[in-house]
Image 1: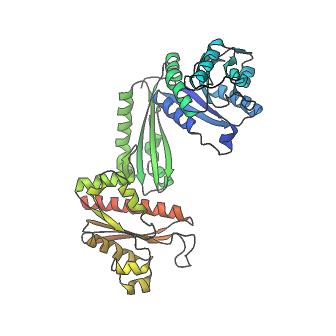
Image 2 (image 1 turned 90 degrees about the vertical axis):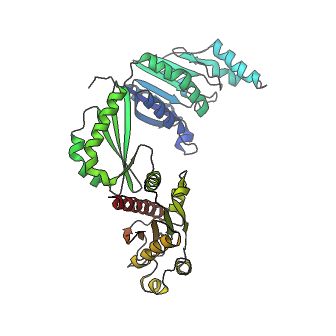
Length: 421
């Protein structure tokens, strides 16, 4: 393994509006992605309000952690915009008029037929220790500092202004200042197994990972992503090393792996159905068409999706899906008997290879002792066989719908693979 020097960055998003939840901090997310592309590791992201003590403490903490500190926000000309004066205080310097910056602000307003006010002129006053960075799409300049063995960049919070400064100045400047390593990611996507069970299955493999490859567990609804991140100097070498590790772990968890990187579960299933030239139809009750929505969100799904029914009321389970009234009366809509007939009958009616069905008590009301809220039955019918499964989920309606969708799609995935085997 080639040695590499890790370059660390911290992102500070400044503004009370971010803390109040009035504006989403999309800037920090975007900056993190761009830094990752060039091999800079973001080690910390902070949101700081318009408060002098908090901001100065954040500057000090960031300086101790990072080689690069990137800030957004607080650069307006009004009294609540504190970034500029506090950076001057932190670096112990004055704020002075920068003629070049003033000319840029004047030009900006003239082109728009607007008057340059005294307040706007303040935009051209900058800390004497900074390098003026022109903002060609706004009035607040960027400020670049090289102080205390750290690189600092202060940018406007307006997303398109920040992105322009990042692309035109910050990224090239970072590349100029550092010999950057390579960061390579690959994500293994799993479904049908919880995080702790997955960790237990792969604990020995994880313990023996090379020092420059890190593993992160990223759980989501019914799924767990395993992100492998490799650090080094050679992209092809890192990619090969990560693939070697995936080959080692794959036999341990292969039945849970449905895809890699950005592939979704519904994309994976679409790929399988097209490969096998198979078709699917759905009968959805508690999910209300949500599973069909996921399947049809994939371009080209018409090649394998036959259609769906949402017979929410029992009357239509009988009249549209031919679920026997006696079965509904004796066992109820949320039962193995009903879900089996729903899956088998939708498969037959829609001339599909697979019939999927869902029926449950999504909540928050409607449950009872024998069948509490969160009780769901799902089924997959295929030629000569139907697999059904009972789920015991949560008290949250939307969460139950989403978890049922993941479980039902995974049941289809496993059914396709089992038939193939």
